[in-house]
Image (cartoon, rainbow, N blue to C red; front, side, top):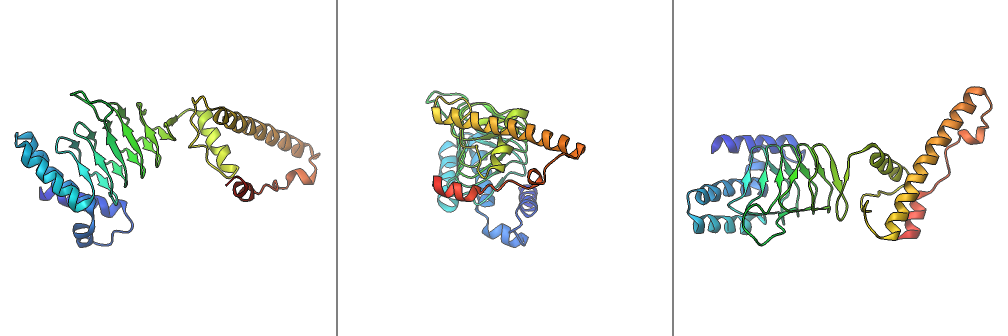
Length: 249
């Protein structure tokens, strides 16, 4: 138990720049307290002491604001940062070296028995407020964006963003996100396969802008090599994204 505790403290010191000492982590980090109490409740659960397990779990919820079902499986070096409002269901499985921020739910979508909650492979990071719902796997090293709602499998190394979450993995999707960021906003909240005409239009505009930007850069570079590029084309675009965002707001 003490070996796990020392390892957890060391993990927090490595991942949280706000942590200044082992004593501070031991006394002031609810994510650490919740994991310690979960190990006790999980031990009771596996030995068949179900009421005692739930009683310890409820005390952990009361003291830390983090609700972990005693049946959940949690690996080593897991860091629950801040932690208030985190809910981890009975059949959830969390691999080693995962990071979970406040407001995250690892929930189920079925009232039937069996596997109902997600499995996180090692190195997964879940942003604040994200909801991961269902008995699927989030692959090794995947990232879940803040406030995303994930209802399907996430491949290893991918990023899931939006409501419902879409997977950022292929080159075209990454180019779309980069172009959106250059224009002063993020398309993360726009669902890729939605029927909403506005979402479809935004995707079309972003893809078109990315394509046009690439072609213009090629043309300017070619003209510059020939010495025929006007000076005004070399100047950066006078695009005030902040003003346009204010108009939209």
